[in-house]
Image (tube, rainbow, N blue to C red; front, top):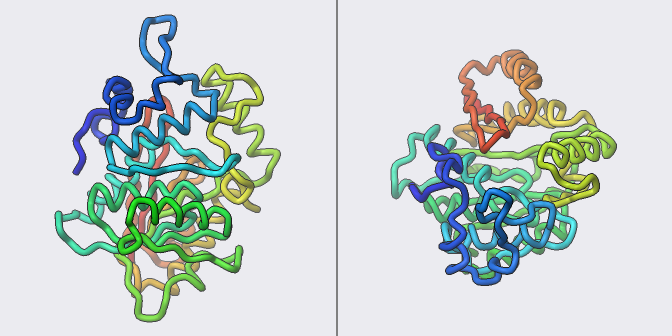
Length: 288
């Protein structure tokens, strides 16, 4: 398990970013680094190019990912939070180094970050799925440029109403499924959420530093409806997956998810709390 400061869940960025090391690894980041009013090195998080350069540097320095890029307007996720998810589910699996683990990433996105971290940190084999062909094309370029074709494969979900159906093949087995579902129930709610986040960060109103396509940010019914559909489909594939899991953004959603799980007579449930800075979220995992 990677123990470098700032990325392991036990550290949670308490020491901030080591910009000197990151710049040595990725010199292009240097042009975006400046000192804030307290004299600390930072970047302008309202600048999408700066955030992308930081992500690229983090992936190269911590995970040996030599090439990483995303198309304009696609989700640029915070790397520490993604790493946090992977480390937590590794502990859920009671992971032993060298074990042959297969992971399914629902909604891999153009950034392909979860498979990159899971393979780099633990050597897992990953199948990533998405409904967006442009996203998968970019993710495939990242995989190819880093010579990961034998470890990370991609599948297009042709039916936007399905999650595991059309993806998990007959007699195929996964130790774990992960998902970072669309949190919002409409485009309007997504915009309001972005504006609130920007206010909390002190960013300008129309800043879109993390980007995101519609299918990445919102779906009908929001994260609750998406997860309810996931639970219902998981029953059909209970013999082909050990653990199912999903990120849950809203704490108010948690008891409703538990109700849904118990409705399907699923009683082996775990809630894994996560925190990065002031942001709090959690993973809900279940097995049959």
